[in-house]
Image 1 (cartoon, rainbow, N blue to C red):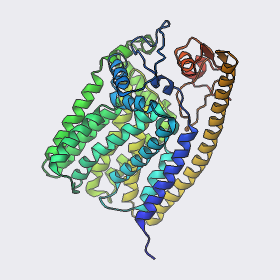
Image 2 (cartoon, helix red, strand yellow; image 1 turned 60 degrees about the vertical axis):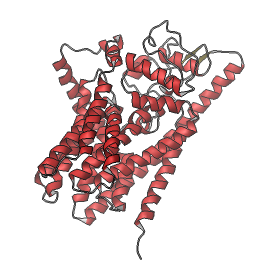
Image 3 (cartoon, rainbow, N blue to C red; image 1 turned 90 degrees about the horizontal axis):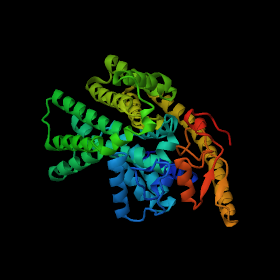
Length: 460
């Protein structure tokens, strides 16, 4: 009996879509989402006497005004934050559907970066899919939370889409798109890819240049679309890094407290932190280091070892470039985790033993099932806790009480779909943002700032 591989691939993608859609519906609007829903003056938003605007984002003109304010006073991430502002104008259910589609798009693009053109490899597609649930230390913040997804999941889709023609051409595969369309398309994609996130944009530039080196090693000519793409990604990155808001933000007292005696000491300390103290990222460092050794000694990779090394270097650039940032958190390692899964998939494809390959898929599926069951249970409990708190806020408002004390919701699980929650200090900026969202005068939680910043587990 002939197996319909296309149907199996569509089936896996469909089941994954429904599962992720469920997870999205169980993840409410939270944390930074409350800020993105309103017009904000990013120059003075952390000042104690700053009066929050009660005007919601309601049009593309509002999006432009807020992006302009953010670019000059906070961050150059105009692409990612535009997505977040736009999604804030719609009901959360719209984001849930769109975000689930982006999740599937990311898996498909990861698959295309590994498989040969036209290849239908069901075990490989399944492996990539389940590894997304196994090898993501901040799954919720990167792929469920509205603000986090727009900044990481969505932008990573554009990064991989931009890099795919580079990889295809470097491996000698045909690109069946008219040069008249491909060259401007690559330039525009490059602009977007370069202007996504600081470490993502740098990774895109590094990998573009590495693919060009491989192309020259293969004695191929460098076509115009490759040059256009490289120019576009460099310009996009300059737009991102040159944003005045980056330097205004870096000079804020919040970040000045993190200063070191010198830039070199800062880099050394941050690299040590990323390599040693971020234990959740050990597995990715080990996989990438293993890939280097595998490329050096494997006899099955042959010429494709240079392609593998391009991804390995890209993963390291995406992760360790965070050492130069004023501050960073674990979710910023997301592009490195995606590249690592691609590297793992390339190693999987080079293995000759079918038993070993199927064992890897079965083991990954088993781990994914455990992770998913546990994750859905956590998200269900979290959703109920959030709904109960909103019901309490509504009941108190109905009684005329607009100064509310309630519980904070926080945890340290990989499916946690938010950054921070309300604190005991009702004057804290985030408390004021949440109070504005619910139409309150003030709101207080049960978590102190020390609980959050020192990552203490806060029980419900």
